[in-house]
Amino acid sequence: MTTRPRVGYLTAASSLAIASPGYFSSGIAATGPVLIAAFSLSKSAFGFVLFAQGMVAALTSPLLGTLTDRVGGVRLLRWAFGLGVGVAVGLALSPGFAVFFVASMLAGLTASAANPATNTLVNNHVPFHRRGKVIGMKQAGGPLGIAAAGALTPPVAAAWGWRWAMLTTACIPAIALVLLWMSRVSAGPIRPGRDRTVARPPLGFRIWTLTVNALAIGWGTGALIGFIAVFGVEGVGLSETTAGAMLTIMGLVGVVARLAWGAVADRTHHSDRLLAIMGALAVVAAVGAWSAGRFGVWMLAFSTVLVGAGAISWNSVAMFAVIKEASAERAGAASGVVVAGYMIGYSAGPWAFGALVDTTGGYGASLGMVVAAFAVSIAALAIRPRGARG
Image (tube, rainbow, N blue to C red):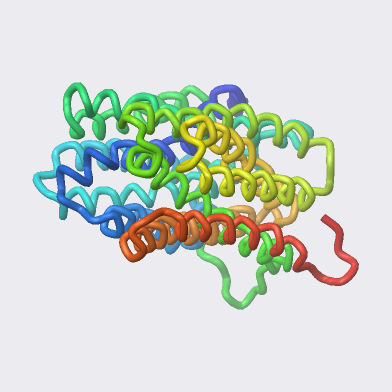
């Protein structure tokens, strides 16, 4: 007799799988002022830490997406959660910047595994009429991780040092591993390698346009998340704790927004329109952040709310669109390709942002770049075959 999966525990484990990479990257971003001082880093060097982490995720996402289709989401999540605990220990115990940098790069593997593995589990174990809601709940893990990192890592770093702040990143994957076991989802058999004489179903044009959209929205989102705390301190004059709180605001709004967007996605077939609205909110948010140096903390807080409502919430609709468009046997691969696009942008954005700050000596050009990236994300949605509808 087959044990019936417990969808509640599966949803919770999936949500934490999405939260863990967000906590890693945002934890580093939120403690950015401390880490820059501790390792004597330039802005571009600090941005490169986040760039390298994201590029590992981007380059391995298609591979892990295909691997998910073979070994199943349960096995991949087990590996990812175990790796997450190891990475946390590596970050905390790193004797110098080189080890910290390598451990940070390995955290990218947890990001590349999360969406393909959880999307496959949802596709295989959740009834179709509940998938939009479940996807919204699991994708809410991303901003939940951002909010938790913004709330916890700056005060922990201030009280006990950055090493203890990095060690907190072990909590999420450890709890998630327990929840995955409690979900009673079996790993299932490992599928044989693909017979290369048999043609695979194509990913489809829509998957590639979503990938372009993902690249642009990821570029702007990564830049803002990566440097919002540093910009808050240097550009707006906030304390390190208050600047880190901007990430908490962004993440908490994102949790609610992802749940809301997931519910809306259940009731509409026009996901392109929803993604365009998110992109428009992100453009307004970036313009607001651009003007925060003149108008102060309230303008920055307003902008972070809009980022949470728009850009941070992108995954909830985008992953629903991927599952809807991709064939069941290629759900993992399709997720991996779109996530790769997002992670390339998410990783390149902070590096480009920091390099522009170092080059120009200010934040104006960098924030202008973010506005442009979000505008491109909207334009990408217009690229579709004749007669196609969102």
